[in-house]
Image (cartoon, one colour):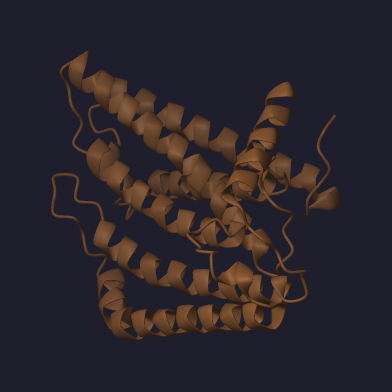
Length: 267
């Protein structure tokens, strides 16, 4: 029996079909590129995959990969994990979509590193791009993980004093925390915007043989994700405002998580 829809409702099936179409197109294009690489002298390789100018096949492939990631992220965000709380903030669904994309990217990094290990140690033909691609994708995963941690309230929090406060003081502490997050976000964007804009506009590259535009992508992405984390913090504050006071115990949390894991394994 298919789990209940979290937010897509009747749109779940069309989104799944769109995802399957994008994934199928990506697989076909990848197979075509591999075929050309084996049997054609001037085939498109990984060096050309980050330089789509004048190569419409590369552009279509990149859009297919992007479409696959976005559609898969939207579709998978409609399912709730066993230890995930119900999304109740105005920004939670968007954060879940980014989280699902980051989970897919983790699998992509594993595949890239597996390919590199096999190529290097089995066939003695190391790649020029696997290390840089792994760094590039891992940086995005790290940023998306921060967004997901904020949405799940799983970032580091110290409750020793917070649990002793009356509810009105807890609310005041929450407001102060969000204000500090917003102040930090403003300072980061104010100080880093011009540098990030410069790197993005010139697509600053990494300076290696493959030479991907890691600085030109990651520096703007840092500021972008910081803004999203700040918005998520505001969303959490609004969603938690009228909740009853909670008391936290490490032992209780562990028992709840163990029970959730036990139930998921039984399923």
